[in-house]
Image (cartoon, rainbow, N blue to C red; front, side, top):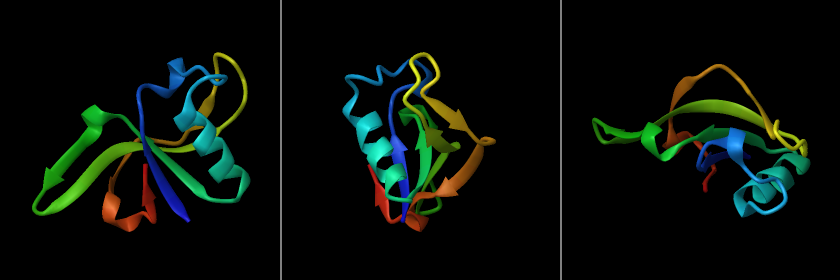
Length: 83
């Protein structure tokens, strides 16, 4: 599945306490594709809900919780889950 995560800046996440990070970690372990965007990157354009963000790979490393792909714009209707 393709899963989009709206969350606060991933670079400052507490990997031991953030529930959204834990959900992303579990989704990744199950083989799902992850996409990350912040609330400020959400928009409504011509009847579509769009987000600017990054493909994401999470890792349990304090201070470096995720590797992000290039910034891109997506239509959230293309995702199976929006969290």
